[in-house]
Length: 349
Image (cartoon, rainbow, N blue to C red; front, side, top):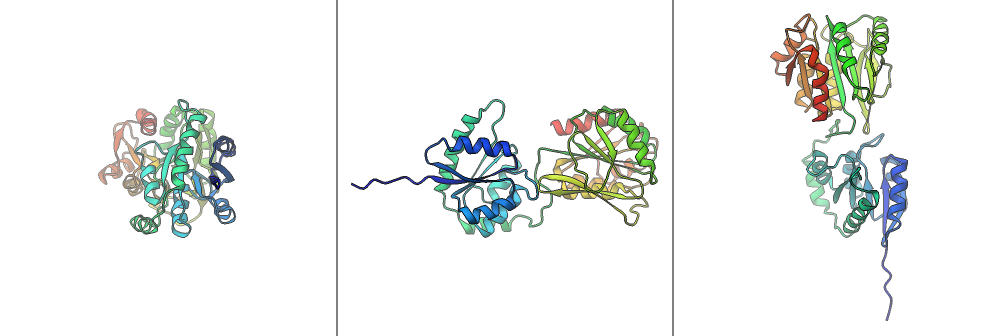
């Protein structure tokens, strides 16, 4: 009687963390019927390895440099459909990322192991999901239909681990920032600030605020990364915009015409945050003259961000916050003394 040799499921692990790739490879290779045939730190390298190795199943992280996992998943299902299991810290049951991943064509989703879930236990579950995925028939027509229902040019991710604070201020803003920024914890989300000031003055402002805060506060330079614990202040005479590469945020600093009669402009910053961060951001418009940032804050709110306006009683000039409130841009209206805590409450909840 002929002996049938079971074929192992060939797995390619795609994750930007070298530690995660190593741990998963070691753990998965200990299970019968699973063979890790390769790893990749980002979707571009994964693309080449898929062609060269022809794995049966892909495990895919969401937050990665150069291209996020959901975007890569959509492209993969369009040009090279195959079983994919999303493995990420962003996939608790019922989260928006789960829905996006499944709609994009993922066979299954799973959270990375946390404090209450050991790596060994998690890998046992992952093995089951990988084996089940390998037996799945990928329906190209269903995937095509789901992708046609998805906006083709989504620039912000549904959710990310790192959040963004965006703050705009004008007249009275220096005093306001000296209260808000020192009240934020050292691990606060990456924070972008536009304070209306001429060139060279913002350097001194950043240095002064940095001395009194647990955060790393500096004047922004083109290409600076936006990371937890860091505050970037737009340099006087230049606009500052948020950008995204994969799941990583950074800023561009550039010249250009004044917007709302201002350079730097809060409007420019807020619009870029709405575009690239969406629901991953919290915006706050503080004391100031004029209407700069009012429509930008509204765009942020419509993109899913939480939004705050300083109240009249604590504003030195109730111009910018008033304009934002009248446009329906402010989700909450709070006093200056409560701005920092409200920012933190939004990301904690």
